[in-house]
Image (cartoon, rainbow, N blue to C red; front, side, top):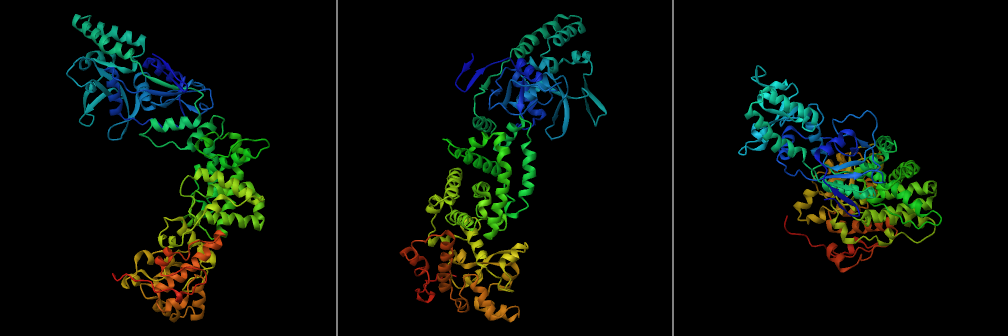
Length: 619
């Protein structure tokens, strides 16, 4: 019984009709479907289920003709169409089953598949009639696959075990060729030939009649449940349905679905993106930009432009469904602007001393940044506009605003930031961003965006290397090994009972070359400072100037005063954070801060005024 709802309908066509439609091209696959991959064992098991009239699961088909059906179609494996045929439906679920059955039962050619060991082969499939009629045998034993030659051998090909290269040999062996089971003319001729071969022996006639009644006829009457999504189904629903029903496969990306949609209009999105990606990736910091990132940025820009059109009531949105609804014209109108926007974003990041993907705090923040840069374009040449964009960027990073619900923030930021440059109020990302002083002690690895952000702020401040006083920014610009290393070495901290969470925090770290870090070793700061001067590479006065570029008070290091150093540097880091975010950090003298750091972290508070910080007595 057929059933119809608002979004889909169901029916049960004969398997033969379904496979016939596949062969004629009336049913095809959307181009985003993966290739057919089933091996011989899967095919034989599937055929066995059909011969037993067991259900093999429903098939899901998308009706063509609507927006959701505007995907580039391609025929099933083994189907050869003389001309481009427009299908009536596209199979979303059931490709492996239907392809296997079409190739084995209707193509008339050997099935290109693989053995259980993964070796490529071509096979014909047969039913052992006697085994099919034996109720005590497993039906899979009755399904045979033979090589393309229709000869099975043993002893490395020296011994012929089975040969069905002629109809007479098929009759003799009682092997029914499945390639003709849905071809009424050939089936009738085979059945008649079988009876004639055995001279109409009553036993043989009865035997084949039983096979036809119990096996052949049920196969020809076998029906497959089909769920047909109506052409009005939106693209995002198609994508979601496809992912739900293909749980065993690779998740379908939004880029693949849009690629298939654009291909219906003869536009090769994959090729277009490959060219743009190559140009974008010339900037180290942009090398992680993905196809989905790019599509989101294009959609964001297109959506924002649409919302600003005279009389528009369109809301800015960049959710999955919005990307899937992106038209080809909108893509063409905005893709180049967005590509340029990514380039301008890279320029801004370089200005803020973010040189590569490894040190990029949030890859996700590139999406709205690129779209904003694309929209503002030449306005970014104005210092005030660039300063505002930089402030928004640092609030997003240091306020750790891009950890989740990014699509909502994308739409909010492009409206707020552009509006801000036009004289409106500060963006909500800036207003909502906050940095708790005690957060400094929780930043210890690159897993945190704020940790990587502080690394870049240190480089932007003008940090120089301890050993030779070379600017760190200059060193990183030549891709030399620079990382963030301990100022009070880990070994010294461990030997002196310093709390690990404090000693390993960003407060006790600075950007240095690997070579310099090896020179510091595990020594006390007072010792490695003397060692640096004694090498003759740098004078004491110049070394003090270099330390100051890292917000380090030299005398605190020479006294090995870890507590005083931590408090003094935390004050300076918070000052730098306030400057980058353009807003004060509250709670710098709160009880929580005093308990964590041994004193307040107010601006300009001398380290000597802090009370001594308790030291963990356990080494």
